[in-house]
Image (cartoon, rainbow, N blue to C red):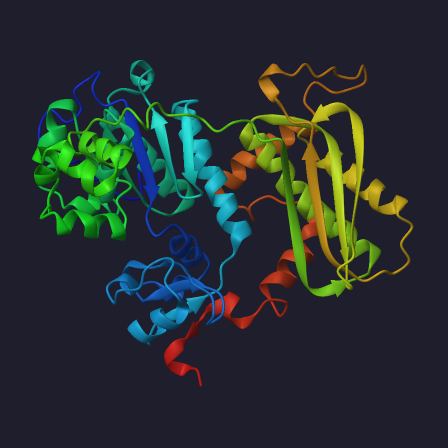
Length: 428
């Protein structure tokens, strides 16, 4: 049983078969929601995710949004709008891990997943009905699974096209779902303001307002020639089509092209020079890199090590291994061998990076096993660890040598704002 009940969309006939072929899944205040998993004491407070005062807002909780705080807004502006807000520094590695787990949920439904960012994606479910049922059933399963396993919520929109599905998910926010069948598309769109149309920014919205166009119905019925004089041929044709729910320019759902490399890097708060500490850091980077490869269904043959010293001098070294891999143990051993070959004597290091190149799709790559290799080896063990981390969090299973590093990062090694946040009202 789910930790919360999915909300059924209004209307009837919303899950008519064969009409809803695209889902748009969007996490609710993703960065804030993930950060609050580590800071439950901040729930219900206006929380802003961002860096220093001269940076911009990465994300705002819904409580902060009631004050007008929005993503991309300068921190100084957000501070003026909401003096009582709590600032939490972003944890990008944590966000990437949760995003990978969420994308893995999508991949269970269909291989045709088009990520838009860490927090949203389109899914082509046109061939998923026989196994998964109606679009509404699929949306409910996705929402319940993410809520149960990641303890965050998402909103889902379903429609015959990507643009309408995206607008439907926005209407459903937060923590809801809205399915729009073919016959419902025009009645769904036309009462909406023109600013809600996908791709209409502030400048275009203002141009439409100057033409007296406030709703999508008005936009749909204005002569296209009038739009062309104001907006140009391409923009006018696209917006006019979208106002009628026609989305040919954005279809179909397109999975991303295969990445040429997968990697992770870390800049340290303080330079490090201890060889054992360096090996632990390389293990952490190798674990992240290999995990992303497994989630992406790829293997790689060339391991690249990046080392940046305290004077900002940067060097890279690479080694190609005999057999393509996505195993942390293999990536880490190669990275350590590359580091040892440098012959450094207590050099102070500012950044380490581990990257794997020579990427191929795992399902299309023949991997020759060794004669002495057990039937179930490190690859199977690490896939089991991935499943445990996806279900119970990244700290559920990890190499023993990383425990000390993890505890140190959660303690005095982090900026105070990164641990518990800081209230603007209490700053000098």
